[in-house]
Amino acid sequence: MSTTPPVAAFGIPPAHAVVPRRPAARPGRWVAAILCLAVLAFLVRAFAFGRIDWPYVATFFAAPVILSGLANTLILTAAAMALGIVLGLIAALMRLSQNPVSQALAAGYIWLFRGTPVYLQLLIWFNLALVFPMIGVPGLWEVRTVSVMTPFLAAWLGLGICQGAYTAEVIRGGILSIDSGQFEAAQAIGMTRWQLMRHVVLPQTLRVITPPVGNEVIGMLKTTSLAAVVNYGELIHSASLIYYVNSRVIELLIVCAIYYLIAVTLLSRLQRMLEARLSRSTHRSMAQGRTEAEVAP
Image 1 (cartoon, rainbow, N blue to C red):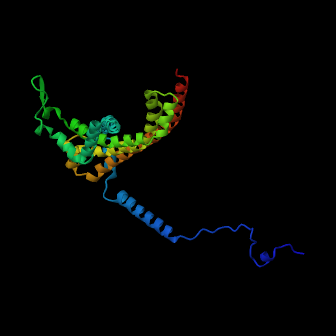
Image 2 (cartoon, rainbow, N blue to C red; image 1 turned 135 degrees about the vertical axis):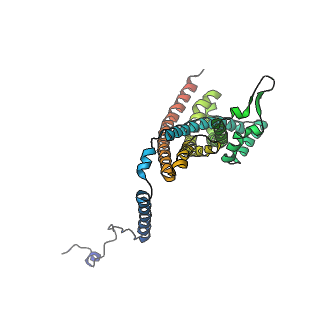
């Protein structure tokens, strides 16, 4: 006698059988993918076989004036970010202080420099001699502002001070993100204020603010192109000195784009490595802080 279930005899699977699910057809996805590939192929063909002289791109890729502009861009990026981080830390601590004057000053600084364009701030710094013809201590030491305010100094102050206003909010947000219970727990086990800042606040704040600050560094790298308005020899300004003479505009702009992409790729890689390192260091630092608090007299 056959043991086949009655329902199976008619081609109907039993209730306990696992029926493989067939994915639903989504033709829209294939149409969108084909359109994207078509657009990509069109762009590649336009750049590869258009009116771009690629040997000319290779010729000027290592030109001394281009390399000098790249070095100036990297130097200005590092200098402006260093100034921005220092000013941002000071402004963030002032915003979190109990002193109303400090809070008002920090809030005014952030409001002013976040509320005006960077381009405008660069022009103001470069033309500061129109407001202060001389700087120094009257009667003791004075110098003409136009002699001191070089293109690099104007770009550094304009970019760095503006960056400090944005970094202040990033740092303040990182400090506020720490749970208040951790402060209470640290005080309960006898941590001093220095131990609290070193082992609880600072490691966690660094871990929290590293991604946004990393993005700010990448943004600063590209924002340095605005320094051309004060005649600073950054990468795009250096390229413009060449294509104003030979009219090879798109070729030299492609050279700049390649260098920017290389720099951003390296910075992104460094950011990921720093995030991984800080994630490990946070756990070690907090464990060390608990050990120090337990052995403290």
